[in-house]
Figure 1 (cartoon, rainbow, N blue to C red):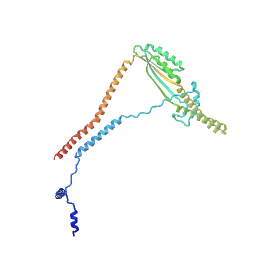
Figure 2: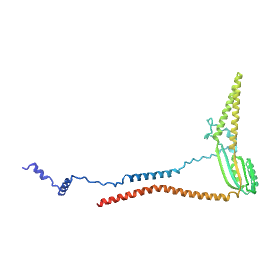
Figure 3: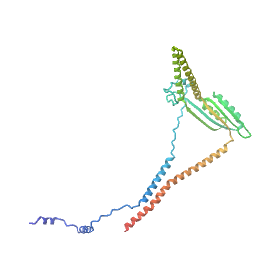
Figure 4: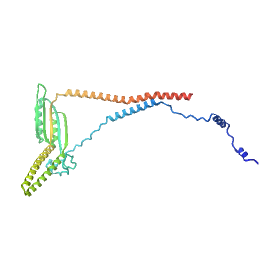
Length: 333
């Protein structure tokens, strides 16, 4: 009867001779470890230089792209005055005052906007026509229900210093027609218009005036009930102070109302031969200087961006080339 050891020897598979030879060889060498592929070592200094150059390039790019950003103020909305039909501005005083006690806010709840309007017009003509143009300015102002606040006309044929200036007041509703009529008198060199919303100030003054009048009514009632001379004198002094305040507020309210009902027009009259050629030459010079400045700014930005990139490439290229050469030498060895 065969033993168990003999049966196991019969069923045990025979190992591959090549495998046996390889294992015996590795056992004699002490089972050495296989070397894994390593990345080429660049050294500490090249890596630090590359990192510093990349950081410098990033800072320059951020400074150039973010330095020219300008925060622009939002455009101010232009609000036209909504006047009652027929040009009747007296009803504007019956607008209910908003519930605030002072300050010059924007008064968003006001039904009628109070706008102070002004315009400036520069007319160029021959000095011989200045008298005729001045007469036209007076005539147009009168036709538009306005008036001339002040005027100045100077004619110097020898030194060529002829000029004129006029300050006009026209109703706000007649501002555009008046400007159009004035523009037909001579060549328009410049024209500008502006408007300031003073509704908040107007309503604030009205509110304070209402409070002062209410206080005066209360003081008059207390004066009738006063029983001593001391009380009467004290109330009369307060009535005098309140009366002065009412007079001052009424004057302020009148000034604001007149400033919004009438627009200011400044007309400058200049010689058409003065500054024509010089102005064109100055404009051409300014355009040329502006173009050169734009080109110079572009070149400075391009150099500032490309210089760090070139520095990084100059440092990194020899390092990469050396690493590739060493890798090829190892492979051939």
